[in-house]
Length: 156
Image (cartoon, rainbow, N blue to C red; front, top):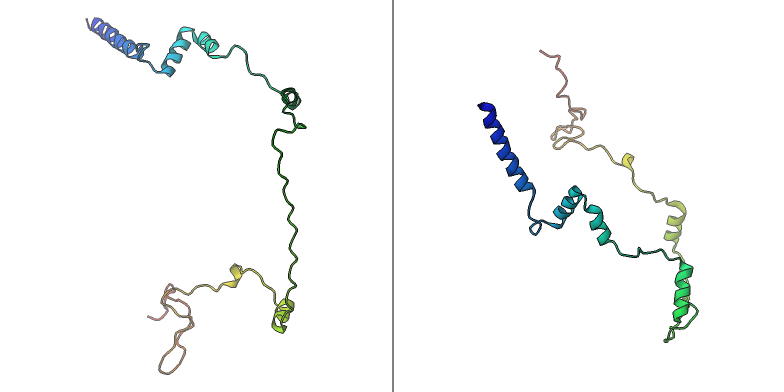
């Protein structure tokens, strides 16, 4: 008895799935129509109908030039309007540079300009700390400027 109920249930589920999977042709999207044609073996006919009767062919530059010459539009032929020639601009004479001052001469001879690198920067001191601690009133240096909070004290 149980098997018969299962078989009937499977039959109903199968019909439901088939009805959902097979939409009407007028309601189907173009992609669904192509998938359906591929499933039924009609895909080749759809592709053949979509292709042009004569496939496009490659044309070499020489063939293209021969076609243009036959039409009277070749590269050697003038096309109705003359082209304006570009005027070549003559470079303007540069003004002579003024002589360098003695300070500029010294800079050119003795200074070397270079980009700053990581070795040019000093390590930053933590916020609120000084390199050395000193007594403001007496001017006496109290510490060596290092943080000793992580070290254990021997004085107990």
